[in-house]
Structure formats: C-alpha cells, structure tokens
Image (tube, rainbow, N blue to C red; front, side, top):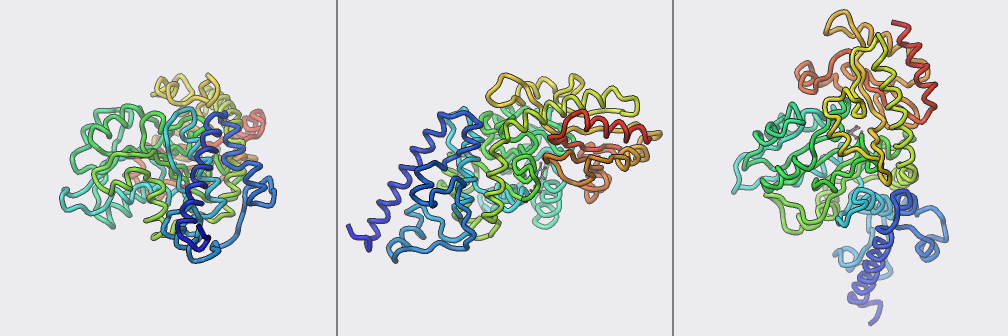
Length: 458
Ligand SMILES: *Cc1c(COP(=O)(O)O)cnc(C)c1O
C-alpha cells in the first residue's frame, strides 16, 4: 500500500492506537506517583518523536503539517490519531489528558478519557453543555446541584444558565441529606451536580448514594473534585460519571496557570445526546463542541500543569497533615468561633469524610489543604474581628486563590462570594466572618506563628 493511499494512514492510525493501549495497560500496573511522574511518555516515545527530550513535547504551534493529502484526510476524518490544530488537540495537552484520565481512574478498571480546557469554569461548561440541549420529546429542562459550590460555579448556573438561558436550577441546600437530592430530581432533570469537598465551606456528600440516585433516574452525576484532587478522592470509582478539576489549584500548585480538566468514564447514561456522546463523552466533547466553541488550553499551560502534577500525592499528604494541625490549633483558640475541616471530630460529616477522603496508596485518611474558620464577633453579622485577623497576616497571602505551595487566606464574603448577594451567601452558608485558609508547603510552625500573631491583633 502506498503512502498516497488513505488506507495506509488508517492502518498507521490503528497501529498508533494499539501502541497507546499497550502503554495505558503498562501505566495501569504502576503506582499513583509513578503514573503522575511518567504518564504515557517514555523513552521510546522520546527517541522516536521528540529528539530524546526527557520532557514531554511543548510545541508552541497552532497546527500540525501532513505529509500528503491522504494523511490529512485520515487525520481530519478522525480515522487516525493526530493533533491537527491546537484548538482541538496538541501533543502537550495529550500527555496532560492521558495522565489525568489514568489518575482519576487509578486502582480501578474503569475506562475514561479526559479533555483539558482553558479554565476550571470552562471544564464545568464543557461538562454540562451537552446535557442542556433542546429536546422536543422532553419537558422544560432542569438540573439539580448542591448549593455548596464555588462562587464562579454558582454564577455560571444561576446567572448564565437560569437568568440568561431560562434553565431551571434546583439547589440542594443540605447535600448530606439524600432525601433532598431525591425530592428535587424528576423526569426533566438532565444531570446531578456536586462539589467534593465544596469551596469554601468544605461540605461533602455521599457520592455513591447520589450516583445511585442519578442512575436510577437515567442521568449522569457530575462532580467537581478540585479541593480533593485525585490524590484523595476519585469520584469515578464511587460511581460518578464525570469529574471536573480546576487544575489551576492544587494540581498546578505553583500558581502559573489557569487550567481545567474534565474526565468522563466511558458509556455514561443520559436522557439526551447521541450514542457516540454517551460512549466516550470526553473525547466526543473534544472532537465536536469543544472544537466548535473553542475553550482549548494553551500547550504551555498543559506542560506547566503536567510538571506540577508529578508531585501531587506527596504534596497532598504534607498539606493535609499541616491543615489538620492548623485546624486543631485554631479550633482551640479562644478568638475562634468555629472551624470547618473534614478531618476534625467536630465536622458534621466526619464519617463520610473518613470513607471518601484517603491518601491514595496508603491506608491513611487525609482531608486536604482547605479549611474554613469563623472568627468570634460581637454580633452575628459582623466581620470586624475577622478583618483584623485577616489584615494582621504577614506571611500568609491575602488573595482569592487556593491549592498553592504558598499559604493563602481569603475573606470570602467580600471576594469570591461578593456577587452572590445576601441570598446567595445564605444558600452557601457563608458568614461574613468566615475565612478560607488553603495551607501550603511551608513548615506548619511558621504558618501557626503567623496566625497566632494575627489573632493577637484582635
Ligand atoms: C477555582 C475553582 C473553580 C474554577 O476554576 P478556574 O480554573 O478558576 O476557572 C471551580 N471549582 C472549584 C471548586 C474551584 O475552587
């Protein structure tokens, strides 16, 4: 067969796919850290196609060239793996996506694919858009979501979806209450959505039970697991269909990149969409709506994220230990009203946290880097002391950010949750004296010393 023949390139494509499956199989036998470090990029790939570089390719290139028209035809009809144009795919993004799919399905035989996007918000949009399509056979659509979600997600659902598109959003006010989830789902519900744990109130829910509820109703469960990361909680393992990450946070921990990751298991259930969509949601999304809508991630962002992800597990271990120590210390402090951290005995769903939050490849629980602290005030709606504490921080960064190697504190009512108004903040159970703390990789003694000084300033 000649290289001028379409069939030749289709055959090359089949060999590439078989080779890739072999590499995935090998990666599946390895431990989490090893997968995070190597993914699918090995010596053979480096020597054959990347000049021997020990780093994955970073081609700052908009497009790929083809040897001839037959290769182009095979590539653009998706009959041969290729990257074509960086709005659709790029080698750096490919390695990030493959590593993520492996980490999100780690320790299981679940098959999944991943689609990297330009932000966590666009990952959420890419994950939810395909279910919010017009279908004349169905009634007016709604979706059911935990009210304990990131401020940006609240805005995307409440303003963009509801106000601008007229899609009904049904909030679950208490996500640990299964009856509430169940009572809101009906035949017009397109998907169920939750955050685990939620930002900033660190709320959780029973993933398995909510997944069962969704599936009994023929709809998928979508989970944003940004604040757990696959090093602690892998929702697909517990029955979720799609998991999104704002990889901007702890995955790309050094704070250089805004990036989203959407990973979906194969063969999901849905009331709408084609068989092709349900068979491999993330790849389908990438080849069609993502291509047409253009939320693609820049390859530089992909490579920076991949680099940071290599040490995800050890950072999550260290950060979780630090957050636990800090939470216990704050909880005992006389100027502190309450501390929310899933690892504390006082946490309202501690048993659920124990079930779902474990450091991968260990038998130890680990509860993540994020906690919420409410400072004692004279009156219930005050933030006087909270602001004194906040403004007194010297080492800790005052910023709307989290998951960094550097400790960051956020006064949420005036920042991430400012636009939601009183009603939205009440729905999120976010008080004006609440401060979100995302511990970093500093020595815990220095973090506590900084907090102690700031609390003394009250
Ligand atoms: C930050 C965040 C997002 C949004 O991600 P971006 O990368 O900032 O777009 C979504 N969900 C959670 C839980 C987040 O913390």
